[in-house]
Length: 411
Image 1 (cartoon, rainbow, N blue to C red):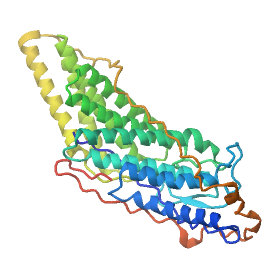
Image 2 (image 1 turned 60 degrees about the horizontal axis):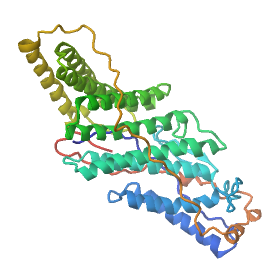
Image 3 (image 1 turned 120 degrees about the vertical axis):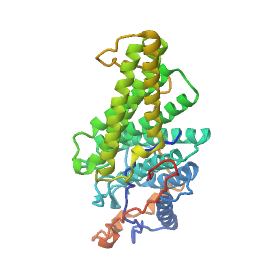
Image 4 (image 1 turned 135 degrees about the vertical axis):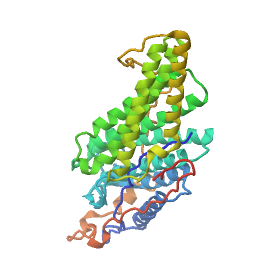
């Protein structure tokens, strides 16, 4: 089963040379600066490389982060920070705020911002795989795992590193708690979509599928609520996506709940449940159109033409017709005016983020290496600050063409 996921653009960053003339007084310190520059550039290249896989991403990210840790943590593992934490200014744009960058002279800001982009890469990798026409079981598992890894990274940044920033994130910026929490929840919800598709494929009990769909709809509702106080100018498109997925999976829940009711000889209630599914599906279809017309970060697509969307429409229609036929021939039950209350709880298949930790400080960092950075020789004009021409350029992301039956672009 193919899937469609909304994606915000990657963060862009200004180049960092890690050249500290006068401050670097020995070859070991010079080598670390060279390695930081090259490993950062390599990681940034991989974000838009379609041949990159999770193993390549993890190796490149670990290589850079282990070196960067020397700018953040003391070598004796005490709570004291590194003397180099504030030596370099870093600039990053935000996923929703266009190309207006935030800048902080703080290596923790760099660690968080680059970590955020790594998490975004995992979501985009999952998107590319999930949009394939004939996704294999192994690929579905990789989509599922990639989304859980991304959720784990976002969660770790929010809980363990963002609180360490000297300058708190501005409202509406990526590192603000509302946005990062929305990313965590969205990743969990999308991973559960894969679980639902698998449960349907293996013909699990309709009650389990209905419960999973209901829990997934609740995840999307929570993510949407988290973003509700943001400026609509840059959050409207993302919120349309979350809202339409909430309606879509609530329709799924009512559809499969109707099957459960029919199996329990409650045909009248089953018809009412399917009618509610039909109503919610129509609402999701209208939201798909609105999503396509809403300006803002994210791809321009027509989700209602996507295979995953059309399949549910056919399922609701066919199941409702079956229930109506059964009621006309066998049950003759009255159809309730109120839709049944969904009080469904899934006991299996709920997604939790994969716990994430940054790698330990690279073995290249020794007391001697650290001593070879002499901050007393730092130039007074502070040449580590970016020059005007060092502004971050927008990330040119690969244009992913849709499979012939998906009817959309995945970014």
